[in-house]
Image (cartoon, rainbow, N blue to C red; front, top):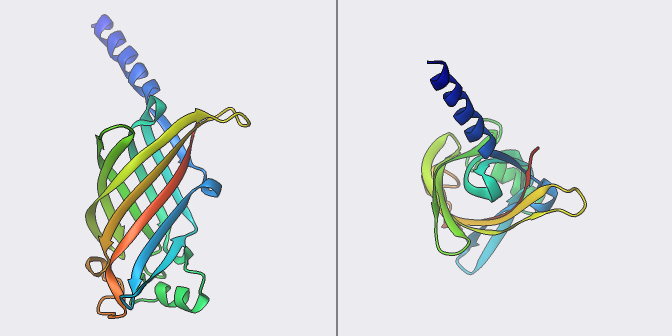
Length: 187
């Protein structure tokens, strides 16, 4: 019995050590979106405040993401429009302070490509979403001596499913999301 207990403790220690936690470097990351406006152009914007953490195997293999985005941090470079986007008919930022995403399935694709599926909650409505991703690389930063990973993620959502600006005929239904991440491995 003692040998079995020892073996379980050793295996648990090995498994725990094999997992790494990575946190977003916000100064080198962005969460961006684009939506059709009046059918002839696109309006773009970003969310400026967010927290992203990933748990991975070594070298950013098999990541599991946990994301929280501050809804009120929406930024389209137009104060009037940003205030309207924070209002109840769009994101209702006072009542729904965060957009969250928690990944459930990681799938390795060809080369450095992957897909990540999970549950996104916007305005209290939770749906499954799949991001297409590319791992740009993993390096050791020469200044900080920390391991860093660079990624790009893309997806498209239907804003009406989340009751965002529903019925607004000047906007398209599809919102293209592009996320650029620099993740830093924690010690």
